[in-house]
Length: 264
Length: 253
Ligand SMILES: [Zn+2]
Image (cartoon, rainbow over all chains, first blue to last red; front, side, top):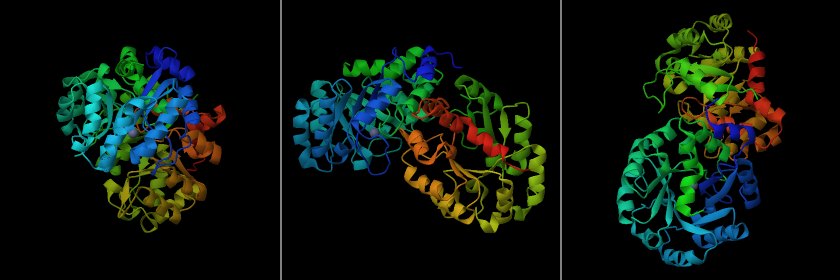
C-alpha cells in the first residue's frame, strides 16, 4: 500500500479527522444532462459526512441558468446549514440587464464567498465586459471567483487567464477543472501568476495530472472540488491520496489552501 | 476486500496518455500501491499495431505475472488474419485467454452480424465476454448507439462496456441493463455521487465490474469510491472482484 498515513486512514474509515476536506467547486439541485441520486441538501450532507468533507462551496444549478431564482436558492441552503455550506453567486452574462441587480445583493446573501462563471455554457468569454460589475466587486473586496475552464476554449481556456488575472490582481481565481487538457500551460500560469489557482474537479482522474501540478505550480496552488452532486468525493479524494505526492501536498490540496483563501 | 480490475492497459501507443505504463512492472507497482490484487490486461500493441502481433505479444509479456490475465483482440474472420473462428477459439483455449476486446475505431471494420456473426454465436455458446470501450466507433455508430446496435443483434452476448461516464451516463446504460441480461458496465469512470449504490439497489450487485482504466485514469479514485459507497459488503465484494471472477469462470473453452 502507498506510504501515506492519510491514505491509510481514508481507506480504513472513509475520512480523516486530521484532514477535513473542503470542496471548492460544487453545485446543488437538478440539472439538464444527468441523473443525480442525491441532489439536495440533506443527501449532500450525508455524502459529505461519509467522505469527511467539512464545507462545500457551491453554486446551485438553478443559479447557473437563472441567477435571480437560483442565487436565492443557494442562499437559502447556506442559511439553513451555515456551518457546512458556502455559496458562489452566479451571473448569466446573456441577460446583461440582470447582472447589476445580482451583484447588488451579494453582500446580503447568506453564505456568499465569491462568484462563479460558467463561461463555456454561456459561450461568453471570461474577459468580456458583462462580468465587469461582479469582477470589480470581487476586486474591491479581494474575493474568490471560480471559473469553469477548459483547454482550448475560446471562452475560458488558459489563453485568456493571464489577461484576466492581471486585470484584477486582488481577485483569487480558481480555475475550475484546471483548464482541462492544457495541463502544462495551466500549471505554468498557476506557478507564474500569484492569483491563479488550479481547481481539480474532473482533472484529478487523469493519471499524472496531480503530480504534474504539484511539480510545476506547487501544491499550495491547487484546490479540491467535486462538482457535487455530480462526482463522488471519494473518487477525487482517492485520486489525490494515491497520487505520487507527499502528505503535506495532500493536506494543502484537500483543505489548507481553501482554508486560507476563504478564511474557513 | 479483494479487487479484480477488468480494465487495464500497458504498452506503447502512437498517442500515449499523460503517464504511460509501458511494461507490466508499472501496472504491478501501481496495483500494489493501491491494493488491487488481480487485473485483466490488454496490450496497446493489440490496438495500435495489430492483434496479429499483439495477441501473442500480450501472452509473452504477461506470462511471468500470475495476477495479470491476458486478453485478446478480435478481427473480422473473413480475412483469416487470426485463423478461422474454430482455429481462433482453439488458440484462445491453448493460451488460457478467457476474454476478448473489439477495437473497431482503429481496426476499421463494422461490429455487426455480417462481420462477426459466426464468432459471436460461438462466444455466446461458450460464454466468452466481449469488452468494448465507450469511445469506440464503427462506421457511423459510436458509443451507446454502437452498443445498442450490437446488443439488438446479439441479445445474449456477454458485453462489457468500459470507461462510460463521467458526465452522466445512467440514462444511456440503464435501459440496456434492463433489456439485455448479459450486459455489464465497469466502474472506472462511473464517478456519479451515490451512483454505484443507487444502481445496485435497483438492479442488484451483479451488473457492475470494478475497473480503473489504468494508465489513463487514477486507480485510487475508483478503488476508494467502491470501498466506501453506501451499500452492503457482499454487494461491494461482488462488484470489486466476484462478478468478473464468475464471468471468467463460466467461460467454456
Ligand atoms: Zn462545476
